[in-house]
Amino acid sequence: MLLQNFVPLPPEKFNKNMKKDIHPSDYRLVVFKDMSNDYAFLCRSTAKSKETIIWEDGKEYPLVKVEISHTSHPFFTGKLTLVDTAGRVDKFKSRYQKHYQSKQK
Image: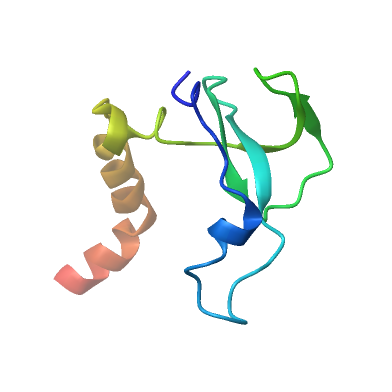
């Protein structure tokens, strides 16, 4: 995993460089899990969650399930899905065919 040597900053150092009174103060470590490929990563967040998970370090953290992450998004993976554009064009033409024909007359 990428975060094997991850050492979280103590709260007093983490909030040191932030502007006063505009950021949430309840940052904590949270596990985000990509449901499309089961990739999970640990980071600081204020996201709320009722679920928890035991992480690789043996500690229990809140779990936030996400549909897509950098490991499954086509922009980051380089894998694009083909879209049936011909089917969409045909649906559009059949839907508006009467309107199109009346304009031609």
